[in-house]
Length: 154
Image (cartoon, rainbow, N blue to C red; front, side, top):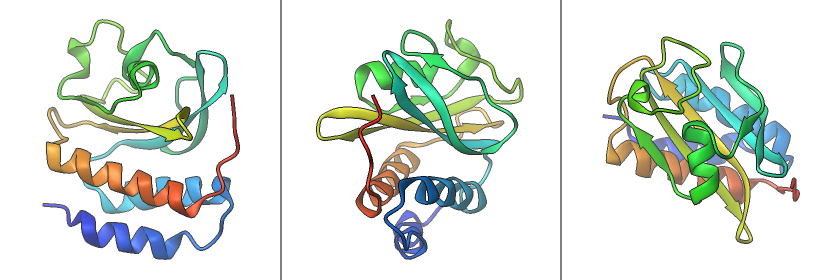
């Protein structure tokens, strides 16, 4: 089981600049290294109306852009709620950037009541993400937000 309390402290120590871009890149690399069974970890940013645009990530080349009305990332953007999907192939409008992905966790990043972006994690393992993983990753996102000066992107 992943020790998210430890990861939270390590990430906070790693994010030693207020620069959001540097911190986003560091967060992706850290999550990819420390959280097992991932094949993609990255940010999509709300830089255009009703659209997410690819930001810093680790993994294979990604789909871009993602409209709010498509896929798991779009659902997180629309609802402002974390999406935890055990089988992405069961999602009718899933956007398959990497056919090896089987499960997904997408955490929206809300700043001052507005969507800033999402952190998207993909795994080649079905049902990879538990409720504990969701809570832990949400805390890591909070750590990223607290450490970063996030500009208004939309």
